Length: 328
Length: 260
Image (tube, chains in turn orange, blue):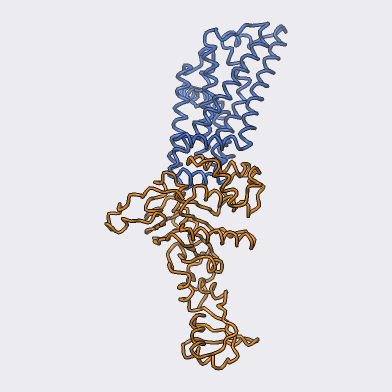
């Protein structure tokens, strides 16, 4: 990675000294607000995204994720509030591709232009050498089709081209808007591993999704929004643990003992037809610990995936743009 | 605006087919039509009957020569000027472009410069080709040379007119942002509005007509000022430049203000 100048900080008069040593890869949104007509798309949204991990940006469709990302990278202007990358507004960055790479959901490649020419003109704006274009084409595995017109690309190839464009400047921050949309499982796994590898290099990865299940296996940290407002910003573990609707599938030869232990801890159980016990109200680690302390043999201890979705649904209930709010 | 931005805009403009096709259409249509008209005029030269063309060729030869080739050929320049910017919006490339150049205005400036230079080069080649082909066809009947008063100025004027016309179209394209809508608007301004206004009787309408962008702009491509002209050749070109400057400034202002 190229050494980046330390941006001048401490500009915010309200909090002197607090942001003096702003991390260069830190994304910060403060009271970010965006209205389209009388509809509020992003509502006084504040959060930070830290380097060195994958931060998932979760919310139902229409929650304002894409708009927030467009505000961060300067495509839309906020009505009020600020979004900064390393302490600077995106439009203040001299060579922005060296700081932030963005893979936006909407198509941004001319169908008649070849992949290589698309990347080449982007590189030229920042005086990035042309050989870097070939490097990123190799990085995403598009070398073979570099001289094909982008209009002939599959969805997966288009997504890879977007990632190649985002990686041109070797940025320390990467923004990805629903990168899994339309990809086959292999493509989704490729993107996931790619993001994790970049985070491990110390980069900031901020990835939006409306799928809790995908984020559960990808993100270390979550920023959850609904109707443009912040619902939660916490680690993925915490988010799952705090769900009251979590459920864990447990199998044990001594079902009665298990139910006893769960009841004492305040959880509830439901026995399924095949003998599995579905525990709600307790986390899998907690059940494991309970079983261990009681020397109870467990054959299976599986946090149930639908429960993650439920955690998400529950937290965002009432903030879904369209649809019935579940009456509970 | 840096050399890098100019290089980037050049890469963009040369890497889509519509650029090449529009330029090719411009050259072929302009040379084709002017050659056709010159040939017909030449073949009919000695036929009996009134020949208003002959008078024009004496008093204002470039009006006839360029009028034939560029009256239609200029539409390709209009289309190209619009496409250069509107295709960024229709394809979504504008997002990639503005992620790379978030200050936006330098991108527009670089785009305008690169396109103007391309337009200038294509127009210079085509204008002189049209002039020399047409005058060669007519040589046996009438001698028209660059040394005659106003002829060289008219040739250079035609090149400048076509260059500024491209920028005018680019500005409209950036304002409207939709290819079809912007092309319709530019063609309306170039082809439809002037004859409509000229239908209105009276001096006020006559002046409004004279100050319309392309009506004023075209004057510089005439060999001599005509009695009906409201403006002199260079005044007309100046008015056209002001129109274009206003359109480009509005385009730049909205580019910075609007969400991309």
